[in-house]
Image (cartoon, rainbow, N blue to C red):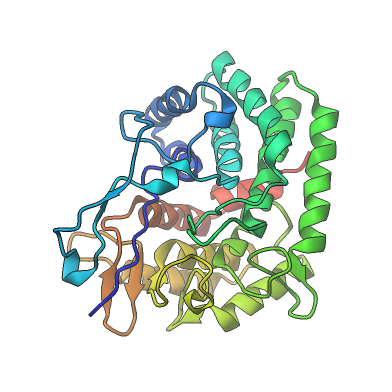
Length: 349
């Protein structure tokens, strides 16, 4: 019996936000990007400590999870759950996603919003008090909190975008202080998140396991694609997480997520690998991988979150916004300097 691994990212406040803002701007949908920013500001308004990693489409905060025991689930994939307990998780990466989304909105030329900057300063002030804590990570694991490397990288992104916004757009804030924290996080990640024996960054501090989210390090501008540690990480992921030319998130056999072992390759992660190839000038490999992802679509062009190369079928949540947004990002990156990966990695303050 096939076991389907339940995931839900399409309602995240931040993780889709930066993608949507960037895609809206590059694709010419500035009005839609502005509307999305307004939705985001309304959804996350309030105390920074109450920031959730996902909301309902109308900004609903209460997303209580419960099991529906009388339903077997698709192909016996129970338990069937309504809601999502991850809404109550601590995922530090969301702060970076939100700050990055609003920074991207400024680059896009969206009008100045006092409410936006006030919210960002409040979020940064709160993040300063919690960024060193272990969290549940981008993949919403249910096996206990860890010091996830990607979460720390995205905390760095939050402070970096605050610094950039102040410097590039004349906004007020304790920029010198933000720079100091940004450097502290950067130093910690490079010291504790890097395994010198593997010559690779790892999923969490002190671990040896890989994670495809590490591919976002050069894309988000944490380190340049030319850095030896980035190249070592890319090589390790190519060797350890690529299955039939596509990318797995991590090795589920390690039991890091509290779920049964076994899942397909992840569409978004495969796009991140293509983006890394673009940044390294490996154009043919990037195009080939991108076209491979496109070939996985169904007859009306939609993608799930995962794909099973053995059974040659899509798996998991369908259709998956995270997958489609990643495909659009990669398409823009392949088009040249207008891509998000270029813009994030080329700026420095």
